[in-house]
Length: 360
Picture 1 (spheres, rainbow, N blue to C red):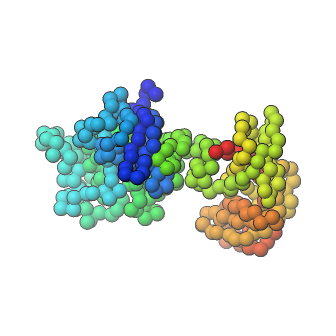
Picture 2 (picture 1 turned 90 degrees about the vertical axis):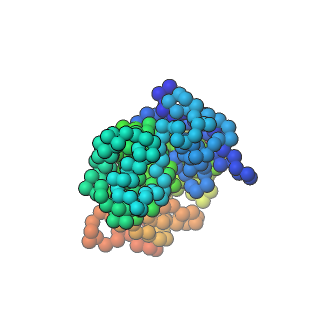
């Protein structure tokens, strides 16, 4: 890819007894907010550390602006890294923390002051310049770490689980701040996270990793609506997955026979596998007390459980066959009584085009 700022080619990292990163190739664009997403142990942090120069590859190439940096030491690469722990110096003020990287690399004193002011302004820390880290909140300490990394004007900023130490509400706030910051500085951000909401809400594109390999690279919407495999579908958001076999196929779609459910017709082409899974997201399903009219897929069942999440609820419906399906309902009125109750009979339905056949 000619316009890539980072091109990773056949990159492998082997440790004794385990291959942490297994023949990975991908391209990351200039000014892109790119996420490496996956469960613990999938290789995403090892991949980030190889880009940073903190781990040396076993084989493969890391091209940064066309130059192979796979064997270049970290201090010689035009990248900087923000660690999960932030690693701010407790004995220094905010301004001194931010200036530290320039001082140790011999930047002239006359240049340091203006660049510190610029970095503090970008991270919205100007009013806190003389405070010590123990006088800051977790979000403010994170912004100090970001400012310290950005002041060196790297081409790429690497972020290793930067929000994991924050509470839920602050994480939501910092997602917006990181996105704003990335837009304002106009450099490439690469974030490692296991949090799907974090990746979906911030990244332009996401690489989902599984067992050292890249399972899929796509935009957040493409990953969510058109996952390439069962693993990606299950890892990104909530999903109903029904295992089945192709019973019939023509130019208009595929009929899949599913144990304990019956046959489902999906308007999808290009299916070559015999054994497949049919996916449907819980928010695509409609629950009703009366049998729906005009919906091609409609099943009756019983509400087994309801999990309340504030703005919506997961409703777990058990079919007479024993198969369980999960649907989402919005909790739209503050004082309304629960629209459904455990033990109540319901119909669950969805449009055939809201199903997706997965072949791997």
